Image (cartoon, rainbow, N blue to C red; front, side, top):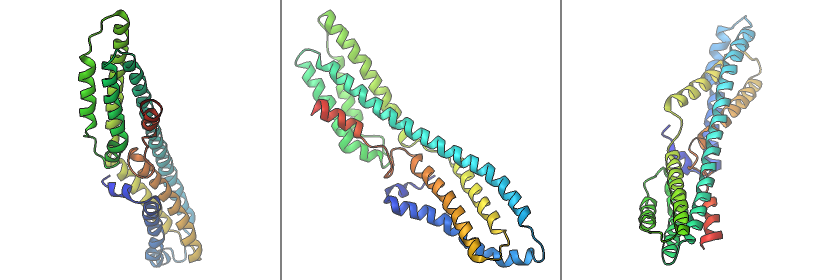
Length: 261
């Protein structure tokens, strides 16, 4: 769904835009369809039949929308957990290289600190724009070259070096998983199902022949508000690293402030 500009808007603006549009669509259709509905259903009470179809469609669509919202939320939490685990792996790597002999340990600590600082100050803002190719790759490559150039001279150094290599590989793996999640949203066909299902549900609501226009408007606005809120939630959580509700680099900041600063 190519609506990435929505993530750059303030929360209240994006909420009003999405939920308001769906609610206005839900209400506006009443005034378009009411003259035709009054004519079509003249002398007949078909509200029970319409309610049956609305219930059938609403059940399937409600379950689908709810499952999608739960799935998106789970993906968001998984991405957040991976970020926390990556930060913890970086902290473990920092402790490992700190135990290497000087001056190699100071060089490695400095390069790893530069990588974390760049991640917090620059790379994260790029992630919010959907950009994954950053200078962080070069910084981590420099750290790798420096680490691989170390030649242990004792059994103790061999053990520390092997553990550092293990942690570095884990950091690289978690970093790759984080980058892949930056632009990993739901497929367009899923959004098509969401929008068609929501539109169908609201169109069926237009078909009721309710004498009180005020009552019809109020009920449709509530249904539009409920559907719009769920769709808005899915939109904002679909890309975990974008928008106001995106994952923050707080885990990396904690590692830097507590260990590297």
